[in-house]
Length: 395
Image (cartoon, rainbow, N blue to C red; front, top):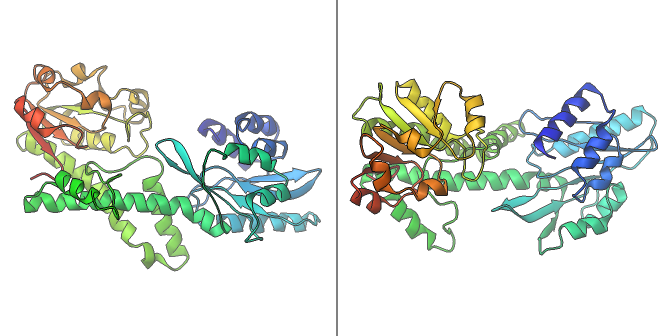
């Protein structure tokens, strides 16, 4: 669901207020294969301690018929089973005799394109997606096939595995990002160049170069939350040791923020007190206004806490940043943010920042010093233009 709609639905469900929800859900799901599920009442909304998972529970003519976990499921493994047991208990208490089933959908996305879908019943390990959804009575199978027909792989598996797909994928991606950032720490003290190291590793087909990009690390509403939730749930299941490495993945990622502050401080001569700093970026990734757990804003906050005069500019995330960090200073353009700056810190790799003319920017700042927190700039070009260029992982 759209975040604003989902919030309304969940809050209303938690209060037990179902009036009007059917129409709201119908409108929100109109263009999805789940559209027909809107004719059922919302009966249950659950948010696990270790993740987030919502469920629609269907009633047809007073009979509970099942539920579907909607969208990109990244909730704790076991959530579906717990919800199903709860629904069955409700059914028994209400004298409803019906056979229940469940379907979970975990959609993995790459560059905005849906690439994998996982669907599964709770009780029939070999039933295809069509049979599951028809049996639950939620959607017409043909509409699902239309939605996923464009060469999208479909993996049919058990409910627990479906719940593990998204969180496992995010944990693997976070591990890959933190690995190259750990190598950056080694390069800094060993005299290496992490960017050249990443390029060399990318030619190994077993590794590949996607997301093997050193820098400030990951943020957003998925990876940080999911790996911490995974650790928590694994501990609950008694297998915390199996994913204990994710604690170091998280720690490496957090260290990147402080290390960026250290580089800015060094570029400023050892102290940030009253030093004007231009912070380019606020969103946790380019082409977004999402600032959830944004490394850029965390760095800006840390710089200001050390006494720097930080001016932040982002092409899209300014309104969100102002609401979340009202004590920071904000600029309406790169030129305004950089005016009189003694250090420039590139914190989100927007194309607009990648293509800045270093000579033009050099005429605006007070001192030509830059910390490239995202390895987004060409060091040679900037050094030729008279800049003192530094980046994480380059000694």
